[in-house]
Image: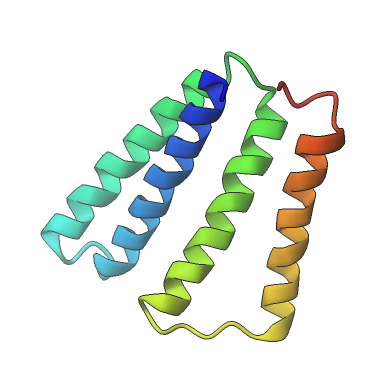
Length: 111
């Protein structure tokens, strides 16, 4: 696996951790989850900056945000008991399809 994909996957993981901690921080009223938010987002953006050496910003951001949306929705459903209706699930399936299309067919995505 190319190094820039490893950076991107780790950036998605850090952003997912940060967003999960954001929910747990209860609007920054809980100290440790708030600290995790700041650190996780800092790590995510640093890793994104490394990814930008190899990928165009639009492609990188589409993959990062798309995967983040789907992962956070799953965590919200599993951990925080948030409901997902059929249109939400369908929309996220379209997001994942878009990421696959970019990776398989786009000449802009660096492989």
